[in-house]
Image (cartoon, rainbow over all chains, first blue to last red; front, side):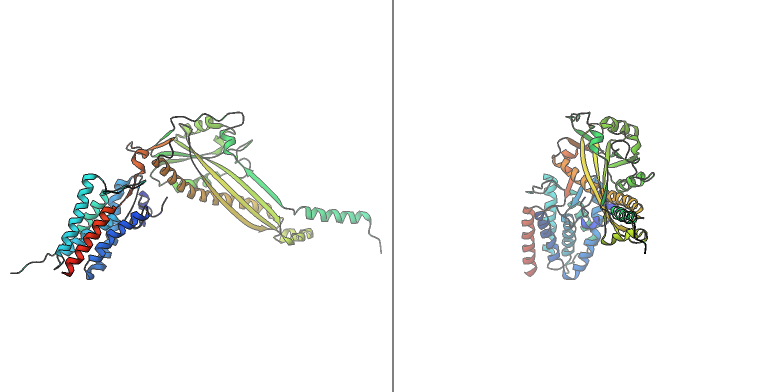
Length: 160
Length: 289
């Protein structure tokens, strides 16, 4: 059995709670997820990049624990759940920063569009995974965790 | 000076020959065969069940050492009395926390008849209430080769003091797992070990016995590890439909073959990846503006 992916063995082998987000089924799977991870890293305010890393380290095992319940005898790999955490976190943070609100809205809008598409179509668009299936729950829980970690947000107030 | 008699010369020659003769390369083979147990020569191989195996998770697994030719493997002296259980426990410990295992039963080899075939396996499985049986067969070869200074054994003292024997014990354990209900072969896994050492002529047998037991222990640990990997690849084969003769059904009654193995991935499609890049570009432009 692969020692990095998320399975019920994670309760005895806790490193899986983190490593499953780094393990992937194929190179194109990893590359597409890496692109999604890169966006919040680039757009995050410079001062908050360390905090972003902290969010990733804390949210990763939480997300894994949330996914464990539905896995049964299956396994989970992939960074897109974690990417959703970071997109939601950075998107919400950008809303409170001057000149970055449109970027934040764009990120949250994009994320919302992905979740909506997955809800309607049941899976990612134009993805043909072999031997595994995409897990929309990972993205939904990831977004929820990202938004929760970003709160409370102090929105900019416009003074007359 | 009294001349040496012919008889004395002959006696010394015989002693030398005996001393050297004691220390020629030797090897001992001990073996138990799964094929001899399941398919004894007087029986033809049974026709496989066309319906195949349908395994309902979690499974009750039985493990047993296969008996050998004329008597049980344990009686032949490879496995000392009381050693069988600790050896099987190695596999049991490795699998006790697996979600697909409900219970693991250690079946004493004395319950298996020589050449008992599937009939005997069914009896034992029914007695222990197990769904699948892992039948463990063994193959152990022990080599003893003389070292260059082993000629000192002819001094008698050397035979007790100098380690002139190079001992090498190679063990191969093979576990074959069968579905009891359909007699379908599910998977197999090997475990192997090699133990080397040197001993004096007088201590040779003691060391070979120790190495025999140690070799078995190490091979069982290796087997437990390999069995885990084989189970994973077996599951993948069933999920992908490669094993058409087997299906695995989970607690909710969902077939592993139909669910596609339940390998989940958090994924971003290429269309979404393009969208991601677009958002990144626009966001960077907005920030500069």
